[in-house]
Image (tube, rainbow, N blue to C red):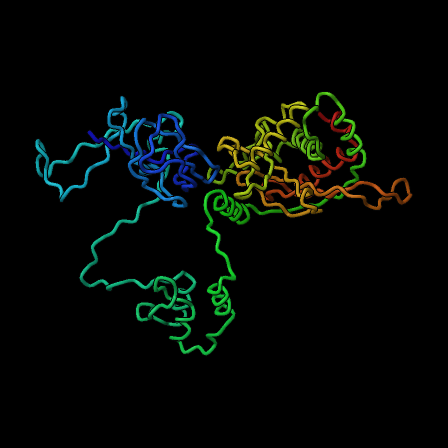
Length: 439
């Protein structure tokens, strides 16, 4: 006997409401076992592998690769006939005609509410734990409503409104019959139709442009950066530092047995210096709670490390980095960076950061104006180390120097505090002995 069960997209953590289907590992007709990986999904946090909750045969894939699916929506149907777990989830409903009251039901009597479905441990959809986007439901058009609504992008609609053009009266020439800017300009009698935008459209038609879907991590990163840039008033300060002594200490550390097999880079000393500066100035490690009108000071440091992954920028963090020894911090930096670049960072790795450091020097860049990670107050950019003319004891010399850039939330950190933090980090990198003296 055939018995189908639907596996619904679970909430894999952090209250996420949707995910993209990255790759299916099975196809209709394949046999699957419990805990066998069947699909990779990409959330706003990370790429996650989902296992099958049942033994059975894949009947249908209910979502395509690249499709964005809401949490709780079925993504695969599995024939579990003969499997011992047939009571775990409801079966796929068979197609039916307009429903009539079932036996034992009274017309007008409300149907009993379905019970909460059992879910995989660690993948469960928590009741009332997420805020779902309202679904668009088709409604029957009123008799007086227009026959159809013209398709047009918001900028085109705005242009039409400004020019007094009714989109419903235009025949769109864009994709799917959508109304374009040129359509509106023609209707308005504008003689400048052959504009720069038209040239761009021509290039797009001839294959000289490429469109990259913005999904998953890249979409989350873009939204986070826009939110941060336009909610927190950013200030960035710069400091050029002579790091010759730090580079000498770095070479000595690499030879120590405690660092065998660990890649030790200047970022290690920059991270340790930042952690020491946080201990001296705790307010730099805080967040702004606008609803409560409070500043939340974190007396622990989850140090975020900006990583350029294939799917976009991510910022995994080292939990309780301030409690680690220097060898422990070196190993954590290496492990987190490798995991992030490989696209294996988990939602837990990406959550809970309190302050961030980004190594722009690896790209051959001297400095930048980094944007704060949402919910944080400061981010330090570490520039490339290079030979630089420097005055030492009144004499011109060639020293190894770099530029530090500190961006901070000016609602919380004023210029005096921001300057003090940056100056402390710079002082420790000029003379690494200060790292020992100040911690």
